[in-house]
Length: 136
Image 1 (spheres, rainbow, N blue to C red):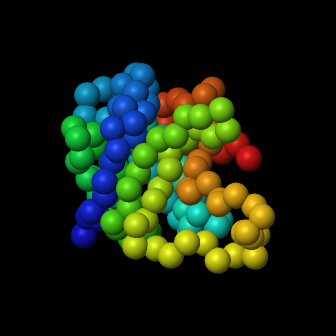
Image 2: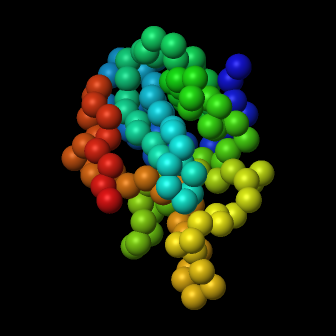
């Protein structure tokens, strides 16, 4: 079953550029692998690919082809995907409006709220057939 995902305009623009500048032929798509991780609840890896891999399904949104494995399809149900580009963060963000706020011990009244699901990538890591390298 394909998930119900909302792609915000900034995410559509980012994903479109990754695929368009990958040098892959028409019909290429965006492989998005999402897994549980961190306080935000999401960790992700992505790359532009010519075709879906084994076990992946194709989800078409806004003219984009997303290649999603089984775990990613489960994790992304009902999630809003956006792209943040600020002086302090840059990357895809994942917001689940049905999930409670983080209750981990690293959050306190004195500290600001954690950044929701931001994955940072080095621009040089964007290339055909290679997963993006995550920066810390």
